Image 1 (tube, one colour):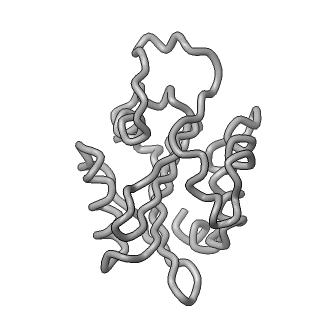
Image 2 (tube, helix red, strand yellow):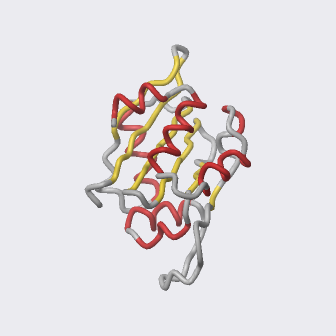
Image 3 (cartoon, one colour):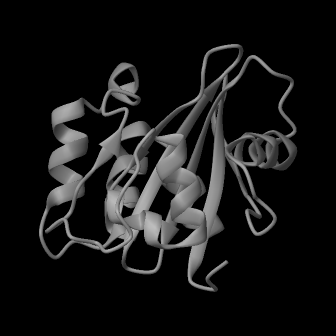
Length: 157
């Protein structure tokens, strides 16, 4: 995994959000991502947890885990699949890209609504993701601010 990868998970508790860094270096299949989140946060199963990943200045992903619900994911750029970790997230998002990278520009994919009930609409998520010249780390900071876990994100960075 790239050394310029940051990944952390956040769980919503009655007292707010709590976060922990997540090691995804051993992740080989999509299920490994959820296992890493559960292990890092010590989840009991029914909590709402978000996995936030940023890779260099290239892309970010947010995966949402909530109890027995099917995990949901948003990937800021489908071209992330050109890296090993990105390939996992692309698979998670249900996309297959040609490795030639023929697509032009940023192409968000996955579940655009995964943060809507937390206060960030699909339109806002897409707008943030596609804003030119804005780094993935900055977008995640804005999202964390909107969802009230910015302090935890800053603490882990």
